[in-house]
Length: 137
Image (cartoon, rainbow, N blue to C red; front, side, top):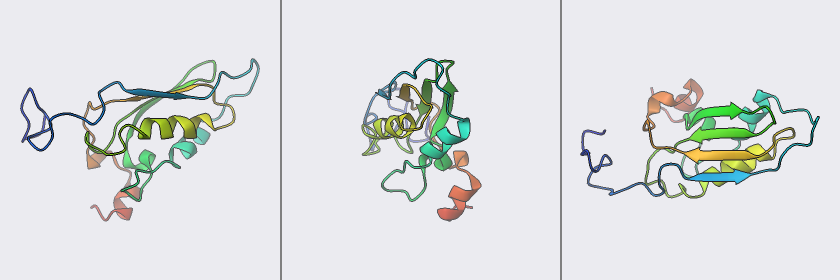
């Protein structure tokens, strides 16, 4: 909880609730055909790096917005992500952008992206490259 928040409103007085609720999800893609080769992890990371918050010149992967990527046996992918702030104006769109980017990778089946607000994102989650780009030391 932030120093400005309360138990009933952890986001402080400037905002009453997140732009979209915890657990909002987006889906894209289709099941892989039996025997189809699955994409390597690196290809999924590269797809995640193509998605940017329109207000920040760093991709969502290096910003640390991707909390978990789960690869399933059948080639499907589940992604748990957050945003830099619960009131982010693209909160409703970003999970769909992520699902579309990852589902476009050859060898990826269905993609589900779930939005979470816990734990809250902090700059500590950013890669060193992202911090350099944004002049955060």
